[in-house]
Amino acid sequence: MMANHTDRGCRLRINVRRMIMLLAVVLLFVIQALPGVAREHERPAKSDCSRTSTGAVPLIDLGEDSYQDAQGGLYPGGSNDVPAEHEALGLFLASQIEPLDAAGNPDPNGTIVLLSLGVSNTRMEFEDFMTIAEGSTAPNVVLVNGSQPGKPISSWVDPNDRPWNGVDGALRQANVSGSQVQAAWIKIPERITSFDELEPFPVDAETYQADFIQVIRNAKARYPNLKVAYLSSRIYGGYDPNARPNPEPMAYQNGFAVKWTIEEQINGNPELNADIRTGPVVAPWVAWGPYMWADGTTPRSDGLIWECSDVQGDGTHPTETGRRKVGLMLLEHFLTGPTAAPWFAMDGIEIEDVELPPVVVADSSSTTIVTTTVAASSTTSTETSTTTAATTTTDAATTTTTASAVTTQPSPDAETSSASSQEGQDRSRSSDRASAGLILAATVAGLLVIAGIAWLVMGRRSNEPRS
Image (cartoon, rainbow, N blue to C red; front, side, top):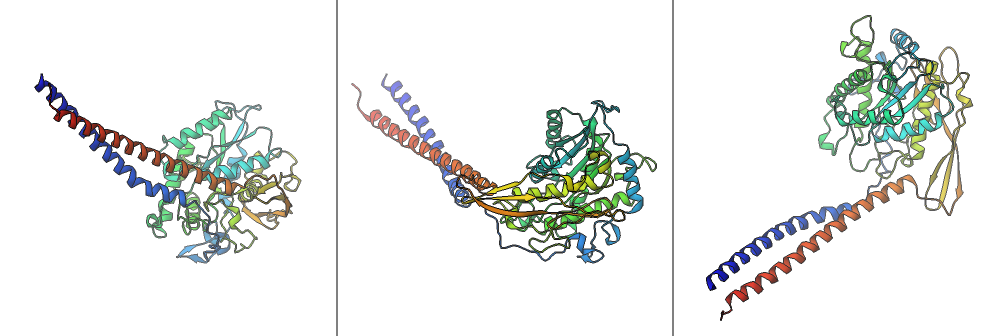
């Protein structure tokens, strides 16, 4: 009996010793992870508002001049105008856009879907566009926000990857089908986590261009009635303090990739063919949507600037004022563009007749109400409309739209701004992770103490003489 008891005691002590060793290893990993969690908690994202310029020249102002041997302008030859032959193809395809039923058959009671494809920024900007476009669209037009947060362009290259499934879900939620998608706005930047990942120009832009071409082909394959797609690069990225996800000069250089992608179709690349007369149609007709990049607070030729207040605390995502700038550019584009207005705009609507809801930007002490107006004057020869603060270049001409009349009113009940809210959410998530780590460490340490006491007690008992 003594031997059996001793054997059981030894085995138990061995098992307890193993448990102590395992708990010690777990505690070691937790302790190593805690400093990183704590640092994240102590370092909330904050825009670097000192980076107001990079010195780069927007493509629309660069013209025939070059950036590192790459010619400017939105289209070939340093021009900002769509080449006549390419525009003719776009007008022809746009004339075929009509209401379709769920199976893609013509139906006067059917739907024309304008779909957005992009990331979180695209989603935010398209949401504002959807708001201000309400009441200005043709009755059969349905806007669907298919942008997928956190999914850079590399995530869209595989036609069966998750972003496309997310778009399918957005279409279902809007009670429309992929067969009714006939137009798209595509703005999908790439993402990096540090400057070490940024390839030198033009390699980075060429890599991005190759992905962009594949995404356009994927869109046509999934939505066979997609006729036209308007492409955009992102807004100014200089306020990002962490060199991610789309910092400068990456944000600027991606504009060249969009330009080159469109030029590939203009030059007859069969991988982007949209003309049934020249071969199998594997892509929609592509052209620039709004070109939104400006060099921070340095005004473009049309007056567009990007201030630090236009982005949230992370320096990347747009605030309400930033979203409204893009929303106005999109509204101008679709209400006045020759390949967009015929199917998008409500009959008789004029850009200056659109009544826009105010943008309310709140901070802890006051609420800033930005009243936006669209005051466009057009000429038949150039189809150019101009105001003063935000801009878009349409298919055949340059148009400019303004957000104006900023007033500040005291508001003791004002909620936090979008930037403050975002930073607060970030700090809250970091705090939760730090708290969870501390709780886990304390729990493991407590178990180690209990196991150690048990081991000592069992060892003392095993050495006591048995009667």
